[in-house]
Image 1 (cartoon, rainbow, N blue to C red):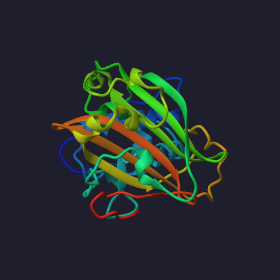
Image 2 (image 1 turned 90 degrees about the vertical axis):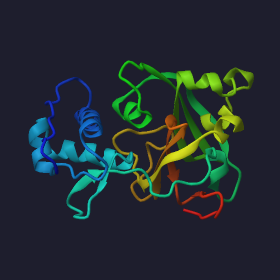
Image 3 (image 1 turned 60 degrees about the vertical axis):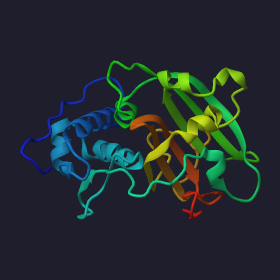
Image 4 (image 1 turned 45 degrees about the horizontal axis):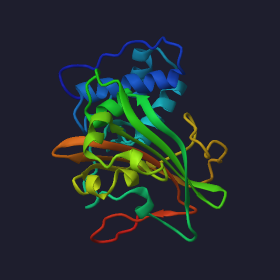
Length: 254
């Protein structure tokens, strides 16, 4: 870690999975004390500071990379705090408009309601610790009976006052789609990060039984309005069955 002040970690000790505890503490410490691009300590030092094995640490680091919190540094053996995507797309489209592929997709809402904030959601949405809950939705998109995309989306509760009331229509698709075009038109993408993904560690509905040979990508995105983050999403996408088409003005496919 560069800089004069070393990062300080507490040894993990509660009843949650150790990799989840390590993940939460790293998110909190890095976001509070390190700038984007800052190189984090090597694995040996982190494992010693946190009081965990390198196996547990590597699982937490893998999840952090998947969520776009850290990325590989110039030296591939080291990692650094990730910076926002350099060229976010020029539009704020819902998942229904950026997923392409043969055959129609159907949406199945797995969960919709309030959830407690986490270090990850508070850091990306720039929320105080006093913000206890978010409105969240997990949606599974299927081709026939096969899950192809999982969408996990969240929005601060106070933001809903300026969005289309969700009670006006049944919950039917992605949260961003149901928030309406007026809400989306006032937003700009301030984070848009693609990374390799796997289903290990924290299985998502419909993806728990997929093998490592299935090509998947994780897309983490934050939309902001007037400089304030107002929407957070993480999408898991099967690239063998669908593609992401983003960048409204150029229609550049990823």
